[in-house]
Length: 212
Image 1 (cartoon, rainbow, N blue to C red):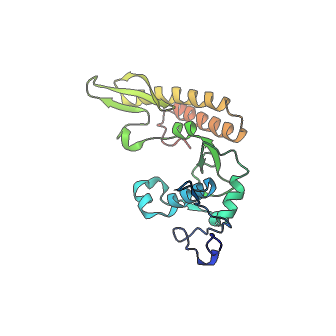
Image 2: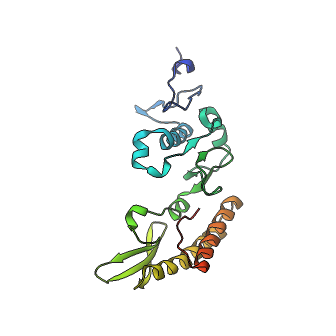
Image 3: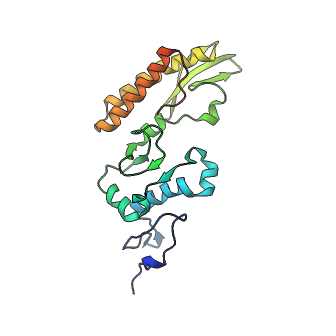
């Protein structure tokens, strides 16, 4: 008797995704369930877009969706098998700023440190510009950014925008350095575009709000 459930009897994943795999996606290995890595990634992006619970916790994904092509697991798996994905994160908008659709022609796998590089942490920074926080003990505005999980302090300023300007210079420089190390020209060009965008904001005397 086959351990693979009939495709016609499978429920839609979050009312959208279709698991059309012809094998067991969560087999029992040495007494423990082990998910197929392709299915795990596919299920994760469906969760981001269509899980009410997940959207309540991660509001930045509100309005995001999955393309009809990736509605079928087999299509996503075929695409992922052709990518350099191990140890990397699926990114939907580094190549196309503002993109909210997970689709094969718009997504790319990026190293985790690049994903962290683009994280803004709005809730943690409060009402100040990116890269700025106010310290009561020093009575000043600290300029900083995160370098692969480590906080780099850039100085203390009396004005939050002056602290932000320092952040703009150093952040754009760092992103450019990371870009120069990338072997994938798509990621390299995307990071250079982001770096140049921050410098353009600096030159125009405006606050950098969105990296992408």
